[in-house]
Amino acid sequence: MKILKRLLLLFFVSFSLNATTLQYNIIPSPQQFHLLKGSFTLTKTTHYSTDTLLSKNAITYLQEHLKHNAGYTLKQDYTDHNTLIYKKNMSLQDETYGLTIKPDTVLLEASSQAGFFYATITLMQLLDPYIWNKEVNSTLLKKWSLPACSIQDTPRYQWRGLMLDTARNFFSKAYVKKFIDRMAQHKLNVFHWHLTDDEGWRIEIKKYPLLTQVGAKRGPGTELPFSLYPTMRGPKEKLQEGYYTQEDIKEIVAYASARSVHVLPEIDVPGHAKAVVMSYPDLLQDPKDTSHYRSVQKVSNNTMDPGLKSTYVFLDNIIQEVVTLFPFKYIHLGGDEVPKDAWKNSPSVKRLMQNKHLTNNNEVQGYFFTRMDKILEKYHRTLIGWQEIRRSNAKLRDKTIIMAWRSDGKGIKNVNKGKNVIFSPAQFLYFDQQYIKSKDEYGHTWAGPTDTKEVYSYQPLHTKITTKNRAYVKGVHACLWSETALTEQIADYLVWPRALAFSEVAWGSNKLKSWQQFQSYALPKGLQRLHVQKIHYRVQNP
Image (cartoon, rainbow, N blue to C red; front, top):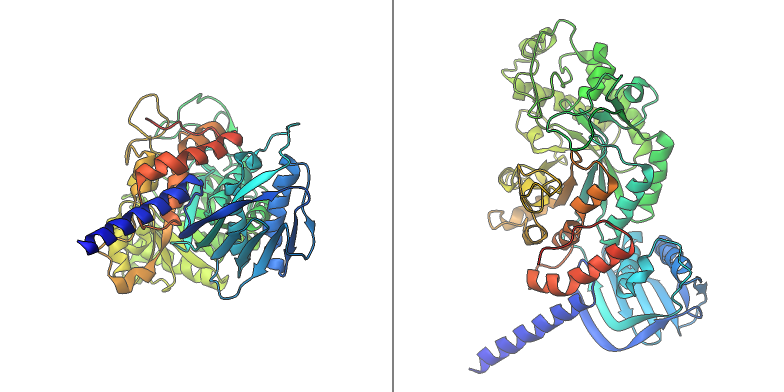
């Protein structure tokens, strides 16, 4: 009986602790949280001290928000009273942080730029939501109260990614920066930038100007029709265009880096390439190829020819420019949904198959990605692709990563074979799906609908994955494909609040995970922060 009472007491204490954490609106919830007595009041007389340049970005981020919403910034002063103390602690792992708030001091500890940034994000989430205000407002808060507490926190997964498709529909540089900032506010650390697809090529490549002169436009007077299947909502007979200059990209990458966000570029090959094929058909298509085929999205003849030497010269030159823009060690090369009958009547592919003893399109694609991986290796980059790149005889380096998107099954199979996998199942983490099935909702239903609760419930570490192989689970990744995201408001609606739940999956502790608690305590506070920033999020169902 005594044992039972102790277990019940432990349960209620743990439940209360978790609920307390959620009441203080930290999303994603930290691994350890202890409420202390009292509070710290931040005012214009508060100062900060630091013993490391690693804290610079974090301090700058806080100062910018204080200047905008309080009208002052903190002075630097090396005292231990009424002070925010940034202290390097090399015993902490990368991205791990400690945050201790007492009535007279706030101590932020980390060993990395990211750790200090996340400690500051948590601190800001404990402030009044007004700290996130972006609009010019004459009403400024002069005092900011922080509850005394002790937090020790570390991410559940190393890779916590979110993708924005700017190929199907173009989004402005300003919106891309907003998207990244919101990611950073919730400790998501990889911005997957889908830059090319059938509907548009969005990255300036100086060696190949037609990619943006031709491939970045669709509609009347262009080479590409405006609306490709699945039909996009809204007006169809108009010009749709846009791309990012190399200077735009450098600016965005620097902006992301200051928020501890890596930028993963995706150049989608060899399929999903209508825009690039229309731009440079002489380099990417065998002139004697009489193949006629359609992709699963009903796009005709949208695939590069792997039998042409010019295809690899072309892609090598593109990668050479891409690596100068993106310092991240990974490049995503797509690899999904190559149409079944692509290359059926391509003389160059037939010669390739004879010379290399290939028997089918899967093996042709395997050959293609073997060569692409060698190109990436030359530029000191690692290949990431959709799960189809491992469906063939491709000879890829061990550090190659696949994104398992169709379901978890292939991902689990690859993990248990000792292959690196990022889980991105459409049924849970594709934010282009409707929240609920309804003609009044934005988005698709082919893999959904998927509401916020379903996102929150997702668990990548299945019991089918053996303990020794769990190191091959690199993380989780959510995607916003933009066929139906015709405006920034629609894009925000599709992402938020699902991304709040996703941040819990990617970072938060799995201990005592409870949708009811999250929905009752943390989610309303998270929505307040979105509201303050004028984010057009979807209102939750009761």
